[in-house]
Image (cartoon, rainbow, N blue to C red; front, top):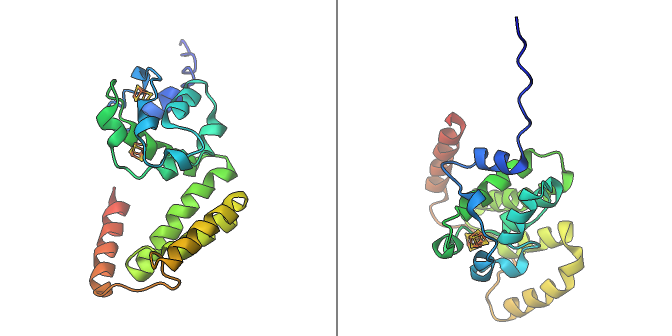
Length: 189
Ligand code: SF4
Ligand code: SF4
């Protein structure tokens, strides 16, 4: 009886492609940079989407999984609308969030920590509480930029664009019912 050789380990690029629903077209990226130039969150990302795709090709897993880039993606799809190669950039960002949560890198939990804190706010108040969310995030994960962000926060407080305390929405009971159902459906997937 012949023994089959073990399967070739998949490249990082192949892993990301396999984990993305449909055809991500990641291989088609020509590194033109249009996506980063279009992205409203690019200034806060530590790598542009173009750079993230280059890091994936270079097998640089830790740099990708510990990057804040997927977590700053707000799913506006503007990059996808402008990409000349029809790369499914937003879908890949979702894939990278999921993969980083399951990765071996502790620092990769920083981004998901922000997402969990946001979900907790919505569960509790029915909406985001930006002041609490931002203070918590910058104190925990980005103390080097805290001072700069604090100045911006004070400006927003003075102009009444930020609330110091959280405020619950009306109809919280209905929202809780919707969220409960959504979680049940998610668990069935
Ligand atoms: S716009 Fe498309 S082809 Fe250009 S760098 Fe971004 S993903 Fe690659
Ligand atoms: S979908 Fe994400 S990566 Fe693309 S432009 Fe919007 S925020 Fe940037």
